[in-house]
Length: 75
Image: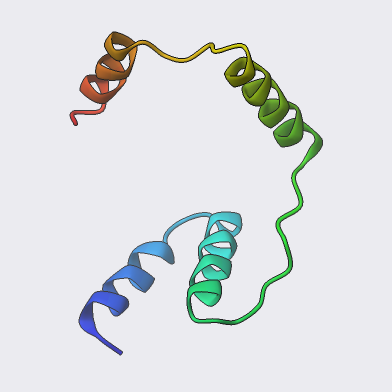
Protein backbone atom coordinates (compact mmCIF):
# COMPACT_ATOMS: atom_id res chain seq x y z
CA UNK A 1 0.00 0.00 0.00
CA UNK A 2 1.35 3.42 -0.87
CA UNK A 3 1.95 6.10 1.74
CA UNK A 4 -0.69 8.31 0.12
CA UNK A 5 -3.33 5.58 0.36
CA UNK A 6 -2.35 4.94 3.98
CA UNK A 7 -2.74 8.66 4.70
CA UNK A 8 -6.15 8.72 3.01
CA UNK A 9 -7.38 5.71 4.97
CA UNK A 10 -6.10 7.19 8.23
CA UNK A 11 -7.87 10.48 7.51
CA UNK A 12 -11.12 8.84 6.44
CA UNK A 13 -11.14 6.59 9.50
CA UNK A 14 -11.73 9.67 11.67
CA UNK A 15 -14.93 10.56 9.80
CA UNK A 16 -18.42 9.42 10.83
CA UNK A 17 -19.33 5.83 9.92
CA UNK A 18 -21.83 6.78 7.22
CA UNK A 19 -19.26 8.97 5.48
CA UNK A 20 -16.67 6.20 5.71
CA UNK A 21 -19.13 3.81 4.06
CA UNK A 22 -19.89 6.29 1.26
CA UNK A 23 -16.18 6.79 0.57
CA UNK A 24 -15.52 3.04 0.71
CA UNK A 25 -18.23 2.44 -1.90
CA UNK A 26 -16.67 5.07 -4.17
CA UNK A 27 -13.22 3.54 -3.78
CA UNK A 28 -14.57 0.08 -4.56
CA UNK A 29 -16.30 1.40 -7.66
CA UNK A 30 -13.01 2.94 -8.84
CA UNK A 31 -11.38 -0.45 -8.27
CA UNK A 32 -14.01 -2.09 -10.49
CA UNK A 33 -16.03 -3.75 -7.73
CA UNK A 34 -19.74 -3.42 -8.45
CA UNK A 35 -21.72 -1.63 -5.78
CA UNK A 36 -25.49 -1.37 -5.41
CA UNK A 37 -26.90 1.98 -6.52
CA UNK A 38 -27.23 4.65 -3.87
CA UNK A 39 -30.82 5.03 -2.71
CA UNK A 40 -31.83 8.62 -1.98
CA UNK A 41 -33.68 9.42 1.20
CA UNK A 42 -37.03 11.18 0.70
CA UNK A 43 -35.36 14.44 1.79
CA UNK A 44 -32.48 13.99 -0.68
CA UNK A 45 -34.93 13.21 -3.47
CA UNK A 46 -36.98 16.33 -2.67
CA UNK A 47 -33.82 18.48 -2.65
CA UNK A 48 -32.69 17.02 -5.96
CA UNK A 49 -36.09 17.57 -7.56
CA UNK A 50 -36.14 21.17 -6.32
CA UNK A 51 -32.65 21.75 -7.75
CA UNK A 52 -33.61 20.26 -11.10
CA UNK A 53 -36.71 22.45 -11.24
CA UNK A 54 -34.60 25.55 -10.50
CA UNK A 55 -32.20 24.59 -13.29
CA UNK A 56 -35.09 24.07 -15.72
CA UNK A 57 -36.30 27.57 -14.91
CA UNK A 58 -32.80 28.92 -15.51
CA UNK A 59 -32.29 29.86 -11.87
CA UNK A 60 -28.53 29.71 -11.42
CA UNK A 61 -26.14 31.47 -9.07
CA UNK A 62 -24.62 34.65 -10.43
CA UNK A 63 -20.86 34.92 -10.89
CA UNK A 64 -20.80 37.24 -7.89
CA UNK A 65 -22.62 34.68 -5.70
CA UNK A 66 -20.23 31.94 -6.77
CA UNK A 67 -17.20 34.15 -6.01
CA UNK A 68 -18.67 34.93 -2.57
CA UNK A 69 -18.97 31.22 -1.75
CA UNK A 70 -15.39 30.56 -2.91
CA UNK A 71 -14.14 33.50 -0.83
CA UNK A 72 -16.07 32.34 2.23
CA UNK A 73 -14.14 29.07 2.11
CA UNK A 74 -10.79 30.68 1.34
CA UNK A 75 -10.62 29.46 -2.23
